[in-house]
Each structure stands twice: as structure tokens, then as C-alpha cells.
Length: 559
Image 1 (tube, rainbow, N blue to C red):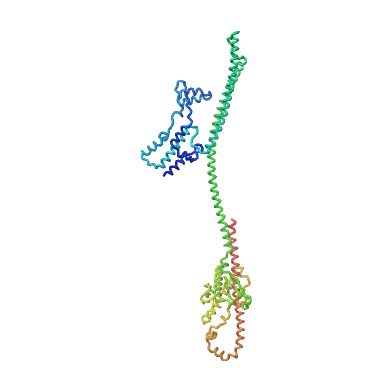
Image 2: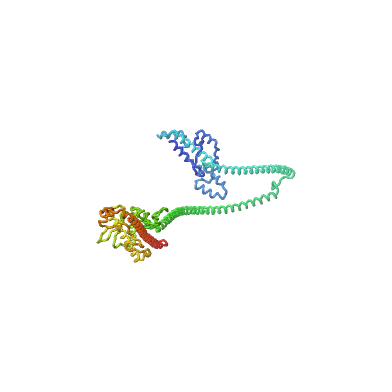
């Protein structure tokens, strides 16, 4: 508990000149009573008070200050007569003594302990040292014209000032000593001259006698002295008038100084108010600048986002239509350099190289793309309804027929699968008819994507049939089962003469294979033509949307 008391005692001292907190030297903090007595005894004795009465002091004042001295004496009840008793000044009438200076540290500690105050030994010692240091500062301040304590810088400044004062006093003392020596030498000369003149006077008195008006010195010297006296009196009167004028000027200057001080205080107050307002405006300006920079940043981000959104088309991102070679290997000859259309990387066509799973997924995306485009341009199909379901999409006829065509096929050989593959051809034809209806609607509306001489007639687009070979030619009657080896008549007929018809059957197979290859190529080209039409529609619609968005945004941006 002693540390806070020490800290408080250290922080309680401030410099009496610059009013800054002080950190006392350990020699002063740990001061003992014996050291305090030794320091106080070594201090110079105070100057004795004047024994002259107050009236004598007032009479000794210069004539210009006697009027103000009388007023001060009357205000302080000091008699101006010589018979009044000598009294001391107001500042000398009483002295305030602190409690620490009246009681020794031991007695103050005992009195505090007698009042029931519990003290820690460390805190009591620190309080004792603090009281001793305070007593030392009070004694030094009372016996010297300087208030204590002082910091190191102020002490150095005072030391420099006192050194200059000491040098000036030394020079003044030397001048007084020289002057005193000159006066002493002059007195000696005068005493020697007087002794000579006295001897001459004695001789005259012995011979002739001294007259009534005979005086020492010559007449010229006396005239010179009288003239000098008049000059000095005139000089005194002139200087007194000058002094009175200077005192009047001093009063004016003092009044002017007071007025200047008031103006200075007013200017300082206005300056403080101006600085406060300037600080508030500066902080508000910085806040507004930060808000402006934030708004500009948000504006740039919004513009970049707007530009990105304007250049973005969801249909182009959702349906990426292109084409790739059917067989990219250079040594292969099965593809014959045919390219197959793709939608989102899925090939549409290219049998038998492309599997049915990929083709079915591509047809599902194609049906979804056609359905979304029709919905975007605001057209409703009159004969069919597209139901996009991915790899298992279908097309339904509108009432009263209500026939459903599957837009997917398979390589399985079964009666049910063969019937489904036949419906697959009808689904592709129905999809092509929906595309035709959309193009005719575009021509009526003046759409740019409908004016490219696209020829769609029944099951053909650009003179390529959309029917898949080997499916539409299959009969749906029971004798068709002989194709899968289920019939007996045809099988017995063919088994009766195998050697006679072997060569002919090989030629027929080669001819059918060439026909199937050409038909599959045409089917692949028809699928690619459908994707080309859809891609053109998507590109033209995205450009129109971008142009309309720019026309709507430009007035807002310019405003």
C-alpha cells in the first residue's frame, strides 16, 4: 500500500515556473530532519525591516509619488505625522504557518495515530519524507525571492539570469569604487588646497585682517556655482514636467495595453472558435470524402456488374450449340469427314458411332431449347406440346388425338422397343413441325432469324430427312417378327437353298449397308440443321435483348 502513496507524493510536486510535474531527486525524497535543519541554517538571513516610521517613508518618496503614497496610507490607516508609531506594511502584518511547520513530523505522526488512523510504516515514512521536502521548499521560498520547487530547465534559466545580474552588479560595484576613489582623491586635493588657502588667510589676518564679506574661493567660482545651481533647478523643473508627461503617457499606454489585452483575449476566443469550427468542418469533409469514395466504388461495381449482365444471355449460357467431327481420328474412314452437331457437348446424330444414351440426352436439350425459345417470343404451338424430360423427353399431340411420341430410342431388339423406335421417328417429325411453326411465326412478326431461306417440309429440313433408317421401314404387323427370327415360313424357305442364294444375299447386304450409311448421314445432317436454326435464333434474340437493354439504360446513365 506504500507504492500509491509514494506515487501520489511524487506527482503532487510541480514546477512553480513552468507548472510541469516534477520527479524529485532521491536525496530530497529521502530527506531527514537533521538535513532539513542543516539546510535551513545555511540559508542567508532575511533582510531586516526598516526602523523608520511610515511618515518618514512617505516623506522620503519622490514628489511625483507622494500623492499616491498618501492615498495608500489613508486606505491602510497609516498616519502621516511623525508622532505616529512605526507600523509594518500589510504584507508584514501576519504570517500563515502550515500545520506541518507548526508541529514536528514525530508529533504530527503521533497525533494522527492518537486519532485512531492506522498507518503503514512504509506509507508513514513516505509521508514524513514528503512533509520534510514540502517544509524545505516552503523555507527556501520564504527566505529567497524564488518560489520552489523548480525543474532543471527553469533552474538553468534562473541561474543564467542571476549570473547576468551578478555580472551587472559587479560592473556597477566597480564603477562605484572607482567613483569613490575619484571623490577621495578630489577631497584630498581640496583639503591640501584649503590648507594652503588657510595659511594664506592667516597671513592676511595677521597682516591686514579678514573683511566682513570675505569668503573662501573666488567670485568667479561662486558665480559659476550659482549659475550651475539655477541650471540644475531649471533642469529639475524640466525633467519633472517631462516625468509628468511620461507618467501621463504611461497611463495612456497602460490603458492601451489593457485594451490590447482585451482585444487579444477576444481574438484568442475567436481563434479557438474558428479552430473548433475548422476541425468540425474538416472531420465532416473527411467523412463526406470517404462517403463519396464509397459511393463511387459502389457505382463502379454496379456499372461493371451491369455491363457483365448486359453482355450475358442466359440462353447462350444454357444452350451452347456447335459441331465436331464425327470421327476425329485421321486414319478412320467410317465418318467420311462428316461433322455432327452438338448441344452442351452432346452429339446429336452420328449413328452407329454415337451411342443412344448421348443422342437421347442431346434430343432432350434440343426439345428444352425449342420450348424455351417459343415461350420467350410468346408463341404457343398449335398441334403439339413439347414435354422436355432430359433423356426421356416426349412430344404429345393436342386434343382430341392425345397421342404421345417418345423422343428417345434404344438399340435393344424386342417388339416393344421396335414400336417405341417407330414412335421416335414420329417424335422427331413432330419436333421439326414445331420448329416450322416457330419460323412462320417469326416471319409474321418480322424477326431477323426467320429470314434465312430455311426449307422445312414434312419430315425434311434443307432436303435432309429427319427419319432414322431401319425404323420407319419396319412393318408393325406380325409377319415383321420374321426379321428377329420368329417366323417359320421364311426361315424354311431360306434354309432350303442356302448355297444358291448365298452370293445374292451378300450383294444385297452390301447394298443395304451403303443405303443405311447414306440415310444415317442424311439424318445426322438434318439434326445438325435443326441445331443451326436454333443457334441462329438464340444469337439474334440475344442481340435484340442487348440492344433493348442498352436503350433502356442509356437515358438513366446520361441523367
